[in-house]
Length: 175
Image 1 (cartoon, one colour):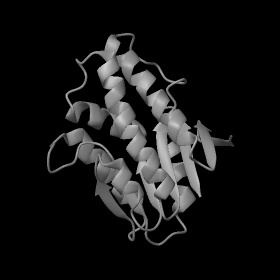
Image 2 (image 1 turned 90 degrees about the horizontal axis):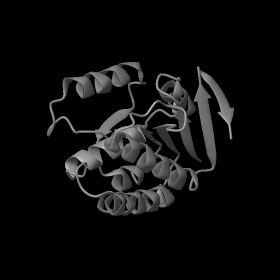
Image 3 (image 1 turned 60 degrees about the vertical axis):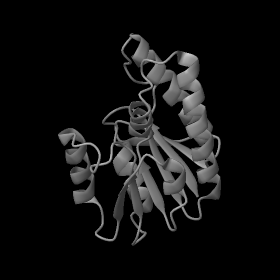
Image 4 (image 1 turned 135 degrees about the vertical axis):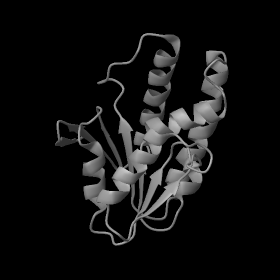
């Protein structure tokens, strides 16, 4: 089973995603943002610690931007979230100041690899993402670019999933 869980910020989507896999004793929780061995962002470290503290003891955390590889990890996989993945990819590639067509080509390459990884995933996969159509996005160039690219990622990966769950104020609608 492959599920994309989407919703606005603080909608309850991460808790819902965790609940989908809570019956599994061993889950790989993928934190696809900056890895702690390369980036000492205290906010990111706090996010990882908070999520780790509420998960079952048998779950392991994998910090990686390589979404394709993470998705092919044996057993159930929970990726939280695609927005942090996209940001980490763009930051790592110093893409924010490139022309839009170059950034789109870069993201297309990463999305193709992620889509292939999702197709080859051997176990249950739950992907968490922000629904950009529901959020406030800054009107400057990088805000619009991020919204458009995350929207593209959401659409591509949702097309490969068995279900899409929309979470609003803790309520879940299966689409």
